[in-house]
Length: 272
Image (cartoon, rainbow, N blue to C red; front, side, top):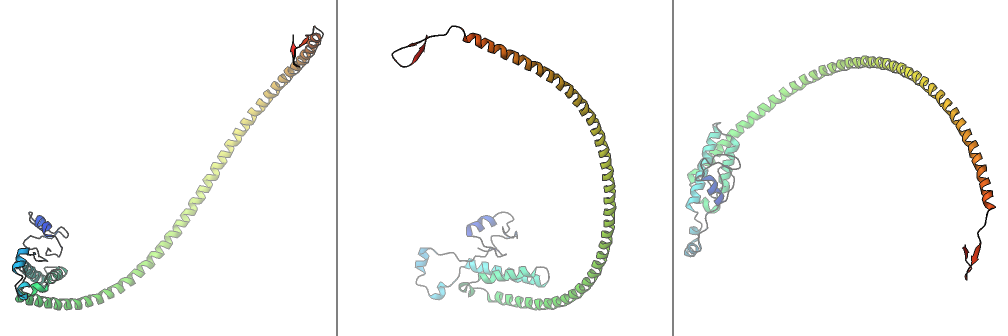
């Protein structure tokens, strides 16, 4: 089934959705009722009905469902009404053409013979009026396009003049900004040199203080080194004295009693 705005729903979804209070199309949010839905395909008859109508003539078999015909005729009448409103300027022409297109797409060859011919003639007449209105609109559009072109030419000229003035203003601003930047750079350079001089003076003072401390530490280290040298000389003399004493002890120990060796059955020596 189709809504008046041309959106398709299955029978179950349409029955559930459009039977609620204040129903509207879920796609475009336009008001839509279940009674105004357009049945795109007639209901299939049951197997028994098909058996009963198997002997009907071709003209009878092509007859459309009355419900479907009434729905299509309502859609056609709605299309006529919206086209009239569009011609009067109370509706959008796109919506009117969409309604007509929806109606035309709903009419199948089976249902065409059962639709009111007066309705079809009315729709054709309204579409002829729409065509006339569109031609008038085309003339107005051509005139408006010409006026727009003239206005655009004048706008382009004015825009070029404004752009030229803006370029001159930007150039002056750039020169002013350049001079300001140069002055700022000179001030920063002067401040940097002044800070460097202050830092260099402080560093020199710290270096002098540190040099004095290092000289004092060097003198203390030299005094300490002399003390260590004296202690090293004493330790060296003591070392040689102990070394000579150790030699004397070894010589005296070598002249003492010696241990004998016993030989067993093997070639190894055993200390006794």
